[in-house]
Length: 508
Image (tube, rainbow, N blue to C red; front, side):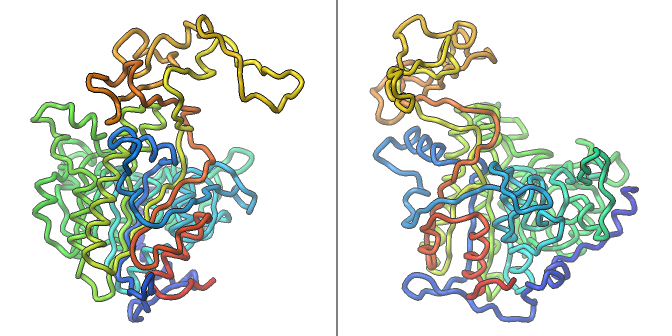
C-alpha cells in the first residue's frame, strides 16, 4: 500500500460517530449534567499523569512540599481509585497490565481493548470517542500532551488505529497491521481509516480545535495545508514542500513565543520534533538552547483553556497529558520522574484555578496506569535486588510469616549489584548494575542535607522498567465531581464524563 494513496483518505469524526450508533449530532443541543449543589456543568477538563501511580503522587508531595503538605491534585475534594486492566485481542479475557493505548481507549470510548489498540475494541471495531461526540455536539475541544501528539494517549481521543505505532509520517505494514498467530500480517480492513497514519487523521478530521504537544516529525507539508484549509492557525511550520520531507531544515517547531501570540479559534502548535524535553533536562541547558523555547505543560494548559473558554455556547472538553512521568519511570530515573510529577501538578493547578473562578467546570485528574513499581523504602535500607541472597524467613514453622526477614547489618550487599546511592555523585552512580535506592532531600530534612546522600529522607526504588497492574488514584473537583469518588473501572470514566457533558448516560 503506497503512502500517496493514503493521503486521499478523508477522515470524518462525525461520520465515525454516527456509524457506531452513539453519535450526538452537531445540530442537537446538549443537555448538560448537573453536579454538586445543582450547578450546571459547562466544561470538562480531564488531566492524566501517564504512568502515575499512588507512590508517584506520595513521593512528589514529600519531595517538593513535605510529608504534611499536599500536591495540588491531592487538595481536590473527591478521591477514588481506577482499575486499569486491558483485555486480550479478540476476546473479553482480562490482560492484567495495560499499555497507554488500551487505557486511553477505555476512557475515551468506554470499551476494554487489547494493548496497542487506538479507538477500536478488542475485535477491531471502530468505537466513537468522547472528543468526537463533544465536537459533533458543538463543544469546543482540545488535546494537549508533552508527548508526540500522535502518541497513544492523545491519539485515542481523535483517531482510530489497529496499532498505536501507526503514527506516520509514512505507512508500513509493520507499524499499522497486527499479525496473525502464524506471524503473517492481517488482511487490511475494509475501513481504511484504521490503517491511516494517525498524523493524517489528526490533520484532516478536525476533532480537536486546539492541539498542543510534540511530534512535528510525524507530519508533512500537506498536513499543514489540510489544517489551514479547515481554518487552523498552525504555529511553526510542518515543512517546505520543496525540501526533503520531515528534515530538521524543512520543518520549524513552534515556540513559547508563538504560543503566547496564538489567537485563533483553532490552533495547532507542535513544540518539538519528538516528545517535549523533560523539564529537569531543559533547566540544565544553556540559555540559547532551542529546547528552552518549549512551553511547560502548565503554560500549554493555561493557553488551551484561554482559547477554548467562551468559544462555544455549549462549553468545552479538554484532555491534558503529562506524558514524561511514564517515560522517565521506564528509564528508572527517579529524579526526572519526580520533576515531571511536579510539572504535571502545576498543570492541575492551572486547571483548578480556572474551575474555581468559572464555577461550571469539572476537573478530573488520574492516570492511565502505574509504571515501574515505584516504591518508597525506609531510610537506610536497601532492596532484595542489592543483596547477596533474598531475606530468609525467620519463622520456619509458619511460611506465611515473613514480616521479620533476617538480614545482616553488614556484608549482605552484593558489590556487583550495589555500589552506592543511585542518584548520588559517588562510585556506582552511573553503573547500570547499581540497584541502590535513589535518595532525595525533602523540606522536612535538616538544612545542608543534599540529594543523593544517605542523610536524605526520601529513598526510592523501582520494581521493573515496565507498567504494572496496580490501580491508580483519581481526584476530582467541581460540579459532578462526587461521582468519581469510587473504586471504578477506567471504562466507567467515559460514561461519567459523557454524563457530565450531555446530562445523560451514553447509549449502547
